Length: 268
Image (cartoon, rainbow, N blue to C red; front, side, top):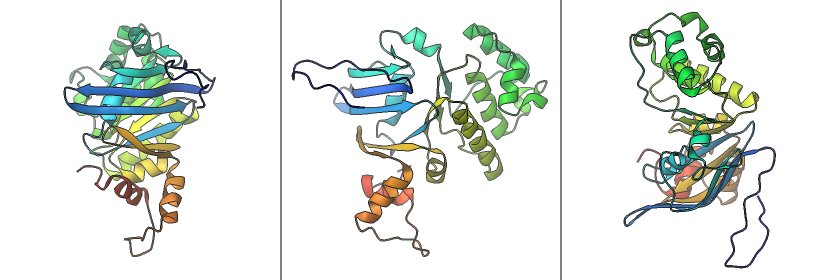
């Protein structure tokens, strides 16, 4: 996004193009002497999967939690669908969906009852069957949560996050712990949400997942975004810097990009 040049003492207001759902500018957050987020700026568009990758402690979780209304920012601006996340926290929470890596549902409720419970909390009239159909769980509607596989539990968490027809979805490591088949089914589901026009912000520890799913990726380290581009462009930029492949087939991947930019592995 291009901002109008103004005087150094005046911060230009954010504009909201029709296809932009999430807008962040110069976001900052510190905990005593620790700077967690240090001037982060980016935007996410409708029908886009935006990945945020960073080593543990890099600032990605704090950034996402500010957008979700779980943490206050120190300075900067963050808007979702034109709403300031600080001034309109309650309204923002009503238009986003959040799928967490760890979920706590009632073991003895069936899937239909679980979705209906969250629909009631959101004041949504979306039928439970519709939400379950979107995540390919309609045939398990009468099954109790405790009987689901890991992949089915993750898909249920997305069904619950869909009950309010969100404009933006936040996915926190959605395939962690899943077997390869369940992971691929989750990828298909996430790709379908993008096709429906939803803005999706994804954090993951799987480079293959980020390279396959994400339209653009921001690499964050020590609270700063050190690169932001498409996966392929990031790879091509690394090649242009004269990087040598470590794989026997000569392939340079997003993992090579990440290590080059941060000097660390993703889960270090």
